[in-house]
Amino acid sequence: QVKLVESGGGLVQAGGSLRLSCATSGFTFSSYRMGWFRQAPGKDREFVAAIYRSGSTNYADSVKGRFTISRDNAKNMAYLEMNSLKPEDTAVYYCGRAFAIGPYDYLGQGTQVTVSS
Image: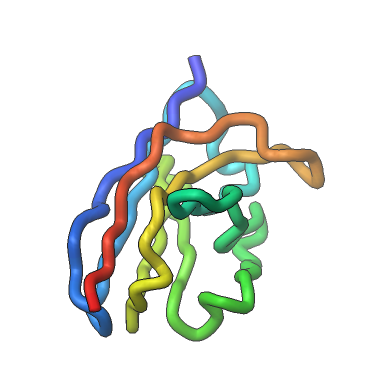
């Protein structure tokens, strides 16, 4: 059974930092691309960052230079380090998995991030 469980969200002031974690089980983690997405109230879910099997990464323009995605294949974990947070980063953050160049087929339940001004 595939499981992705996010944690680490919370309330932080603008300019602050948070580290999100995604604990996974039920699949061969190292074989998958992992991504982070977010959804703000009244808005569509949007891509935030991805990390490939090779370790290469890509980011949405809105978070480049502020967020860092990483993975630990030994622990089956993905992370999102978020620095210089802005109120517009407020959203529910989800991690997801995708195989090769395919679509993301599983997402976790999400963790709330709220950035106060």
